[in-house]
Length: 287
Image 1: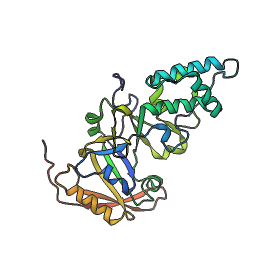
Image 2: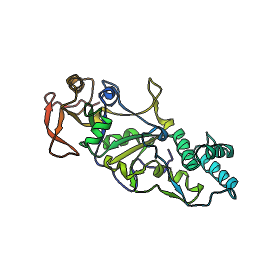
Image 3: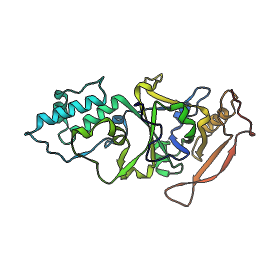
Image 4: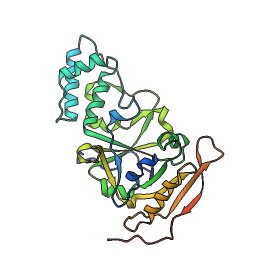
């Protein structure tokens, strides 16, 4: 992480709580027993939107300047991640394989060697996200207090609000694909995804940990968990696991309730219908 980068995006401040939609099978990572909460830091070229880090070009790029453009791309992309240099031959191979988008493909692959993305939402009740990311509304949504992330992740991650555009961004030349613009490339999407109201933690992969499945992950403390949401479809055994973990004295989760969501009168959102207390309020021990 560059020393002049701060945890928060200089142009926007996140809401106090950001939400993670998860299937029930991911509960051991997002709301674990004893160990820290963990999330995958996904390289951008493995995200579910094929247009991640895609752009149009406004510069002349034909046989008359092919070699010079190739050299510029090779030089600029090598500067993005010097430990994995890009050669002129690499650029030419991408040209052959991706004639319409070779620059974007190169940029995506190069950034994906260096960075991982962890996605959150400012919304907790969107029915599309409950369906897409929380196993057809059978999963869980967990809210995390961003203030508890700062001390834990400062120096390794930066948080950015996703910008949604009607058209792919325009690039005036290969030199635009540089470190100064890297975070903007990784936090720009099409308006088709605007309903997600996404915020992204962007982390240097060298600062992540490796899970038992050899996946890059970041961790945050139990104290950052601020809310847990389930629906009528969430299996009872999952609810029971959540209750057990909130009551485990070895854990440091600061909440003692679960928010219940159901179908309501709006076709696009789920309705909050009340809270289920898991125990009497108790003080969280400190060290």
